[in-house]
Length: 332
Image 1 (cartoon, one colour):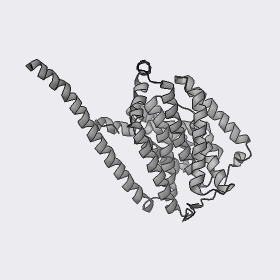
Image 2 (cartoon, one colour):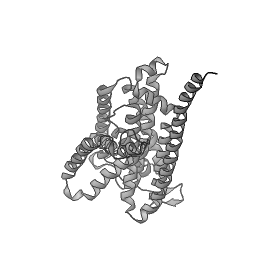
Image 3 (cartoon, one colour):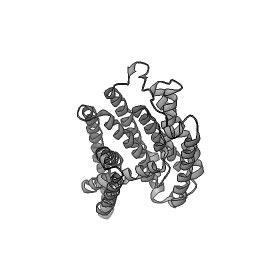
Image 4 (cartoon, helix red, strand yellow):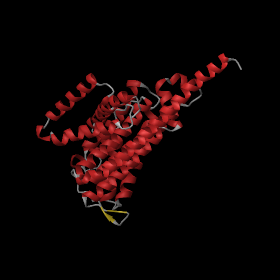
């Protein structure tokens, strides 16, 4: 074998080895982050108000579900409030009127959010860009007006005084701290599911479609089917977040299905870092914290949010976590 051949083989093997080493280090870093996150979740309710923490976790899961669609498929949905809000209404109705236990109520809401995602995804997925975004917004507004008119939603009053019940008929969720650990478990389950989706062969195909759809089509991938599958997964997780939120706050209202909720989740994702696993949860924590601690400012909270959004876009377009990922040269 000539020295030129050996040199060329070595040149080919080096980049492959470097990529494998980078992948291993990234996986190790992600594992450490998840372990640290689990530890933080265990300590948090003894330091901060559990209800506030549960709100952060619900919206962090919602934002992560949205980011799964936009960050890894390039599909901008302006209608994710439909799945979040409808799941919230169904879970609240199931718990209060049908007498479902909390786990069944949450499961019912998630299932309805998923089915809604199947129907709306089938209608919208064949369009791209602004047309896809506008279709999702229009469908979401249809859900909003349905919730205004439907009797079971309570109209402008919403569904109030939703019982938290007993988990599996045994664990009383009336205690905020007990419920917090249930919500934390749901959140971790959702985040691990998202991480697994992103780093699966399916997730790699979705990245390829996002980066170069014509090339993915030429390779024989059924692009629309992949997009629809990811859309449904995203709506299922958004529904899970909405259903959990209804049990936490014992309330489902029109705010959950309003178009502004869809805009808010976009803001959370962009502030935290689009195309990152952990960015949306950071963005959700920032926005929810602002809403909570700046509530005395009234409508001026929206102005502050707008200022922060503009500052993030101008200073670090990658978002908070995206900036750290760029500095560390590791995907986060």
